[in-house]
Length: 120
Image 1 (cartoon, rainbow, N blue to C red):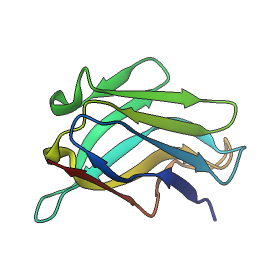
Image 2 (image 1 turned 30 degrees about the horizontal axis):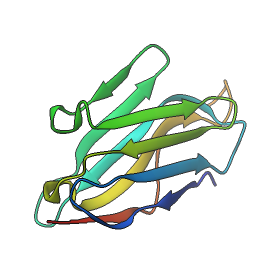
Image 3 (image 1 turned 180 degrees about the horizontal axis):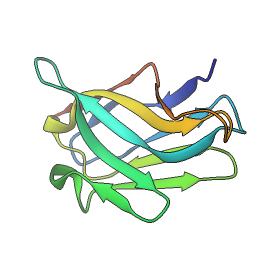
Image 4 (image 1 turned 180 degrees about the vertical axis):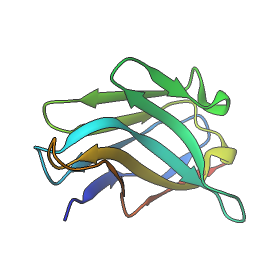
């Protein structure tokens, strides 16, 4: 069973920085995309950013402040969050779409979520 293991998160003051990391438990997982979503209280889960083989996409709300980097060899993804705002407060979820072998279809995998709280 493939797992996405997240680390990082916590409490930070507005204007500060945090770094989230996510690693797939199966290094041999063939990943087509990997990134982050977030869900604030009372709101739907939304995309933060995603890395595919050819590009990186960010939500408008985080452009210029957040950076996603991916290590394909290690099947890890990092979310560097700078200039944090109170509205960035949410549970952040790592997401990956991939297949365990070329003979299998793709599946979506999710991390357990990590809380990010930004105090104003």
